[in-house]
Image 1 (cartoon, helix red, strand yellow):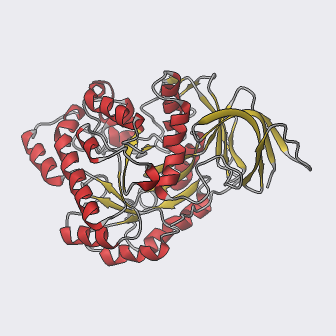
Image 2 (image 1 turned 60 degrees about the vertical axis):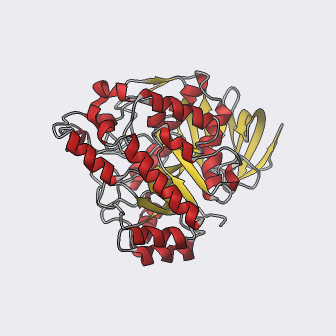
Length: 443
């Protein structure tokens, strides 16, 4: 394993940016200091004028393997992830077959061990009838990121609406429970109101604020009754924000929340331009929701920034609105998007690191990742905040081959991505020589 010295780089970590050297050895961060001169052979990187961040930890991606590999697979999407500065991902269970048994969950870990250039973990999936199987995951609470419950239907047939199942898992799970919250009753009623819905502009009317709030409120009630460790994914409405607090630190919260980059960037005003390309669940909604999400992110009611990376083929997205699947490919461009907002003064680069690196590590209690600290795994991303990057067909690495950001120029660029002390992305290319590690948890 190569020893790497990065010289005179601006390290962004734990609310502070400072120029220093950093030595990476045996896959770990060995030393952070000025004027480091290591013994023996090493690779030196000149970090002058560059920023070094902890690798992004994305707590919600859909890499489609097994069964949906015409859209994506773990190998292709992990490569896209590291090209975007994401060194660790947590992947969702709505594959085909869904990961609703211990063996099917292990199968995904086996695929990642053989093919993923990024670090990985996988959620155990819940159905209406597999509560006992889900609770067997309690024995693996240091090895599995969490349990995923779809409390509203989305891609795949994994809606859980059996109260007995929900109550049993909320009361007995020793793992974090992550929920997709949209109320199916409200969605069904809204569909009846718009039987002739023929374009994506109807999507936030059908999957509306009430659908999100009713389901999130129900999840919070269950969690409060049973003192469950609950994490609600992809918050998209202003109304849901009343369910979360900033009155105490993230490490003390039992109920946490995530916001996704597309809900911070797009609004319902963008449907005429993008149509089905930004159709996702929960829906991108009216501008006042985006404004409220930004306010809650900055004041720490919202804890994590993630992607909900969910690729579909171009042909699938060109179908009529009601047939087109929901989901947007995002993992390659999430960090540069948030760095764009940092350059615009919307938030600081230190806040980007807090919400995309530190907070996921804290929220999921990930062992020795998410920070630039001596003794921690060397998962790092080197960025140039003064070089532009234009998204094109030639540099999109998603297997689906498209992005809603195609043609957009970002005012920052990923220079290198390092996973477990190995350079896996350099000079615009993924170096597919190494495999990521299964992440572990301090629970």
